[in-house]
Image (cartoon, rainbow, N blue to C red; front, side, top):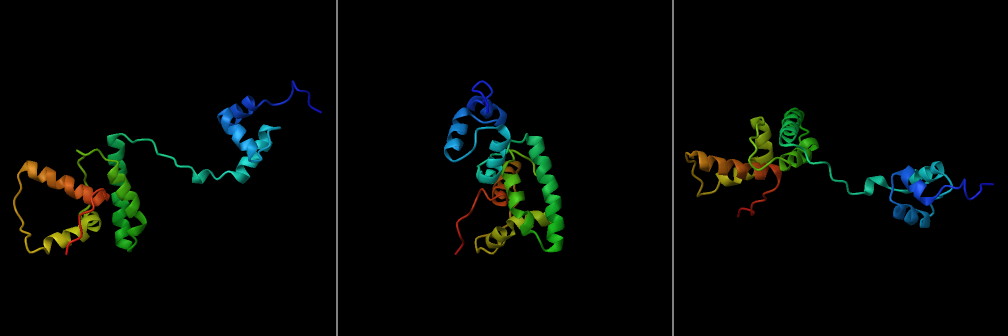
Length: 160
C-alpha cells in the first residue's frame, strides 16, 4: 500500500503528461486513472481522440511557403499526367493561400490551367472579353486576381 507521501499528485501527473492541472481534473472526471503516469497514458491512448483537436500548423516564412508551393506544383504536374490532380489540388490551394500577397509564384502552365482554367474559360467566352496589353501595374493586379482564383480565396460570381 502506498503512503500519502509516495502517492502521485495531480500536479506531478499533469507535468508528466504535459497537461495543465485543470485538464487532469477534467480527464479524471471522465474516468482517467490518476494512480500512475503509465495507467493515465494508457487510458488517454484508448479514450482521447487526438485527431479531433483543431491544430493550426505553424506559420511558414515567405521562402518556406514559396518552396512548398514549388514542390507541390511539381507534384501536381505529375498528378495531372496520371489523371489524379484531385489528390493534390486541395493541398496546393492551401499552400497558395499561405503565400504573402506580393509573392511571385512560378508554377508549370498546366498546373495554372488546372487551378484557374474553369474560370478563364468562362471569362474568355464572355461576349465582352477582349485580350489587351497590360502595363506593369495592371499585370500585377491581374496576377493577384488569378492567384486568388488558383488558391480558392476568390470565388467569382457565377456567369450566366
